[in-house]
Amino acid sequence: MKQMSTQTSPRTSRLQGLDLARYLAFVGMVIVNFSIAMGAEGGTGLASLLTGALEGRAAATFVVLAGLGLGLSAARNTSRTAFTTLKRALFLLVIGLLNMLVFDADILHYYAFYFFFGSLMLPLSNRALVGSILLLNLAAVVMVLTLNYDAGWNWESFTYTGFWTPEGFVRNLFFNGWHPVIPWLGFLLFGVVLARLPLAERATQRKLALFGGLALGAASLLSTALTGWLAPYDPTLEALLTTSPVPPMPLYTLAGLGAASLVIGLCLMAQEPLARAGVLAIITPAGRQTLTLYIAHILVGMGTLEALGMLGNQTPAAALTASLLFCAAATLYAILWAKVFKRGPIEALMRALAG
Image (tube, rainbow, N blue to C red; front, top):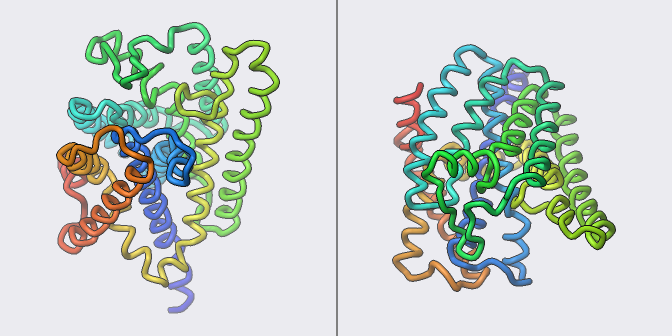
């Protein structure tokens, strides 16, 4: 009996570790989105530095985890996974476009296309997937150099003109939106690659954390060094060397992949002690309802902030406090909901409609 327990526990704990990573990525996205919505960007305090460190990294980690889930599902049944994923992509497209009516920085409609292209690329080898990630980043650089990245944008108000036109929608989706398919699809493909690794093994977890930390540090150092050396000769190069998500250039992708690997590796390593301490029992219900909670942080969280007159001209500390209060409330809700229902309400609706 003892040997059987040892053999079956890694998979269970591995899944709990991924739920922990999803939860942390969700908290990071809430902090960033609340900061933007509350006009709290800038500053040099601890809250501002934390928000800046999470900007773009939390969302990238979320997409990598989505790809990891897709890859794990495909390992069980590739043909069925592809068909189900296409139906869920359509569901996310509808939900995301509806969400765009109230939140311009929606990521769900981008997810729909990540999943659409990702499902078609599931049969590819790891080498082909990595090559696709590199090509996506090369294409992003070429597009920034040859097309007008500012088209449609009012950077003072962060509003996008023409999104609902065919030309504007395609431009925003693939080129200059908040999370454009080129190169953001690469994060999902990286998750598919990770799903093919023996994630339950401690050696793999350590390598993920090590690679992630090194990649994150290398991206920052390269950006600083290359900008200092090359930008004086051509100021336009600075945009190509940034680790900021806007525009998403190769060093940003490297930083995003590094952050995702670091978080996933550390969460998988920490899952067992956190499970024994009872922490995972508190967190995993929310980690399994992130689609519902993503919608809730916009409709409920930002709706409450609007009712309180807190959208705009707030401090980074106020935005961070509001974010953490919402995440605490969301965590409590998820625990109570999970006692009665197996899935969150949006997750259950998606399963009912899309399988």
